[in-house]
Amino acid sequence: MKKKIIFSGIQPTGILTIGNYIGALSQWKKLQKKYFCIYCIADLHALTNYHKKSILNNNILNTLSLFLASGINPEKSIIFIQSHVPQHTQLCWILNCFTNFSIMKRMIQFKEKINSNKNVNMGLFNYPILMAADILLYQTYKVPVGKDQIQHIELVRDIACKFNNFYGEKIFKIPEKKMNKNFGSCIMSLLNPMKKMSKSDKNKNNIITLFDDDIIIRKKIKSAVTDSNNPPKIVFDLKNKPGISNLLIILSNITKIPIEKLEFRFKNKNYNDFKESVVYNLCLFLNKLRKKYYFYRKNEELLKNIINNGSKKAKKYAKITLKKVHNVIGLK
Ligand code: TYM
Image (cartoon, rainbow, N blue to C red; front, side, top):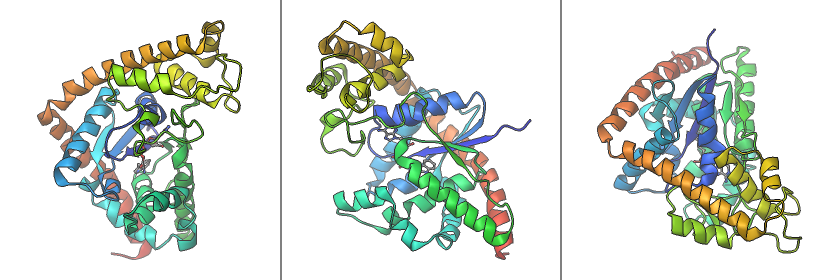
């Protein structure tokens, strides 16, 4: 039986956080067992923040090395660069014409970005429609993402339904979202656990990046907020103990120990003991990940081969869908 298709992407901007890993990369790895997975480095999305040539090139190779270090296997899955498959921008234009302006104005991420960004360009506004093109080109069954992308996936579904209904044909498969089942779909900021951990956060004490060394990790976890108004117990309670719960989610996802077991393990321990364990396990986990990362990162020949092969394979699928779209529209 043909395997169902999983598609997802990450922007090669800056350094990824433990949130990106838990919310996206760790899921991507697991899904390879059951599905045919297609993973994209969304370099065109990254242009919404201006990048110098050498920085963008470098970030693309860094991101690819992280995919490989996280266990994404190019023999099983397609890994490719968005800009290498021109069908993405071609379909994006067509979908622009099927997307209502008033719906786009409601996109939460866009509204947040215009408040914090001096460079409010049209790419930022159109960004979810390019995501729609990414996903719909591959007749995707599920899209593994973090919680911050839910509204975008809903939009993709709306666009696909509208297009299919307009032409009375099932040109696009209607994709579903897929979230981390162990509460990891939204890792929160360390100093403000009511806010998402974001790689673009200006205060770096809010985030754990995949490249933080042991000393930095210790400093950041030690200063993470721990809900001082409550009795100092290590319990999972998202409403009353968001800080401790966030650390429990991180610890559970990197050690694969269920949250209830962790609660039991730290039943008679204090915040300090608990944080020591988070520090220890994060350092262990990230050091292992980085060791694999550097192994791949220094082999640029291998990385370039993976990119070339992946883009060739992705193009084959993308061409089929775009041809169907052109035919049904009358663009022959
Ligand atoms: P990006 O690069 O901002 O984030 C990549 C993935 O990481 C998830 N994520 C988180 N998960 C849990 N906790 C967090 N704190 C956290 N922060 C980020 C995001 O939800 C995402 O899954 N537009 C996308 C990239 C993209 C894409 C696509 C995704 C381009 N085309 C098609 C899916 C399908 C983005 O900017 O993600």
